[in-house]
Length: 280
Image (cartoon, rainbow, N blue to C red; front, top):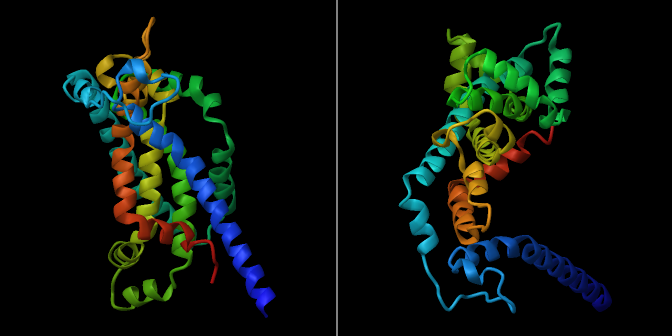
């Protein structure tokens, strides 16, 4: 008996040790980024490296937040990401409800099409989308980014929300219709409110994907006032020197909204990500 307990304790210790090593491995770059944002640019590559700078300063943050051009990068990113998230949730809820509750002839082909879009490398679609956006006279506008990003966020959102709706009993819809309500009323008044965990997980993923996108943001915008945070970070790389501390500070400020959202809605996020994994 004691030997079994010893083996279990050793196994538990081994698992915990692996988790700690993995957490340190994954978190150290983030910690280094945070610490580097408070260093002068000349200390970034000092050897031996200094974790805590003797010249601790908020100068990088002040330089970013006091520059209207750099602040505009954040406004553009947050605006585009918010609009993409809103429209993606709206369309995905309607599409997922249809896939979950109705049987129609093109259901399987459409499902295959949605899944296949996920397998297409985005870079292969860059030139076609550029030509399409220019033809529609949307080049260098918010709509160019919003509509393009939705192409890549909608498949995942539809798949996730369909799985979530499949876990909800059809009796909920039937109860509303028996009382004289419509399917539309059942969707928005009953199913959507109890699908908040799924909506939060899809919304957070969509917001993060749209905010981190670089390739299409660079190609489909031209003027400095339309650039997003990833492009703004790249523009801190000068011809003769890089503003490393500002790059780190801008990276932190760019990911801060997603981090805060995750901290506040972590329980719903995990619940929503796993809700469709088990089919009842």
